[in-house]
Image (cartoon, rainbow, N blue to C red; front, side, top):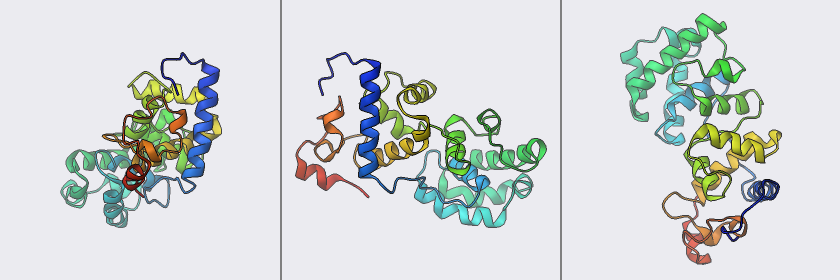
Length: 232
């Protein structure tokens, strides 16, 4: 695709939706890769996932949820004990404060339950729009666009946005994609970012949407070498 050609909003919308369909074929198992059994567990796991991997979070949360299974237990957790458990996920002191603060806020303001509205979720300690949209989309079935580092990178590379502001990117993607696809489209972009469109050197030669990508060619273009780079 010639990046020098000015693209209309209609053309960009059609391209974005075609890309999403192609990514759905490439990643039929796209999903939230955090382990959870209920909205509270997903909320806490998402907060803990900042600046670390989902694999590390998933290895840590079973003990967290076993020892502090509900909002009241989290609110009353001993910080030192919680910090010890959270040590493997990094930034454990700040994250422990967030977990206790979230538990207290849920008990005090929401009857111990995770709220179903974005405007309520973002009032919780350590919870921003990204985390709120993860919870809404995956725990409550409310469509939401999750702008993590992968979605931010791919939105720029694919020419969906010119901004690095997550709130602007969320709005730009929301204008291009069908609302009912927001949650799954986010998962597909995240899968693609983790498995093919890497930050340092994307595997362009093995990318299913290279023909529709203004940034195609910035990475490895040889099909065999690109295929060897793929993950997952």
